Image 1: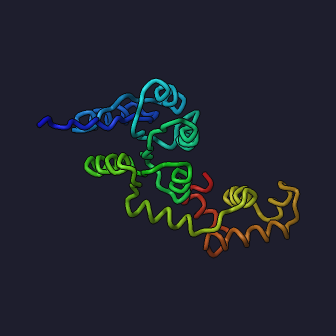
Image 2 (image 1 turned 90 degrees about the horizontal axis):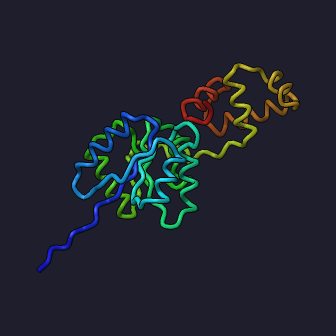
Image 3 (image 1 turned 45 degrees about the vertical axis):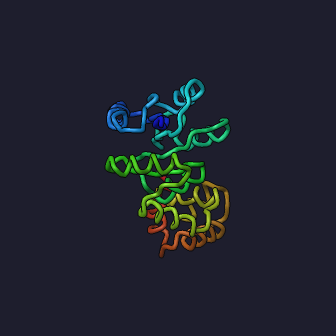
Length: 210
C-alpha cells in the first residue's frame, strides 16, 4: 500500500526587519511539513508575491513602513483563496489585537514566542482554527467588552495626552468647553478609569493613541 504524502504548509514571511525574516525562514525551513515560499519586506511586496505564488499561511508583522499589517490584512480579504494570517509582532495592546482580529487575522503571536508554540500556531491556523494564546485572548476580551470610542473622543484623547485643558481643546476643535467636558466624561467611563490623566495613560498603553 502506497504511503500518502501530505503537502507541506506553504508559508510567506512578511516583516520589514531582515534579521527577523532570515531567522524565521531558517527556523521554519527545517521544520517537517512546512516550507517557506518566500519573504517580503513590505505589504506591497507581499501582495506581489501572492499574485505569483500560493501561500497557505502568512506570518505578518503589524507595523511596517508604507502599507501596514492591518492594511495588508484588509487587502487580502479581496483575494480569491486568500491565505490565512498569523500576526507576529512585538506589540500586544488591546487595540492592536482587536484591530488585527477584526481585519481578519486568525492567529496572534509575539516575536519572542518559542518555536514549538509557533509551529503549533501554524498547524492550528492551517487546520481552519484560530490561535490566540490566553494572554492575547484576554486583551481581545477586554477590548471587546469596552464600548467603542468615537473618532472625536479619540481625537480629544490625543489632546489630553499632550496636556491640553478643556478650554484649549475647545478652542482647537471650535466646540464649547462644556461639550469637551462631556466628551471627557464619556471617555473616562468607556475606558473605565478615574480621571483624564489616567484616561490618556490607558489610551497609550492600550494602543488607542500613540
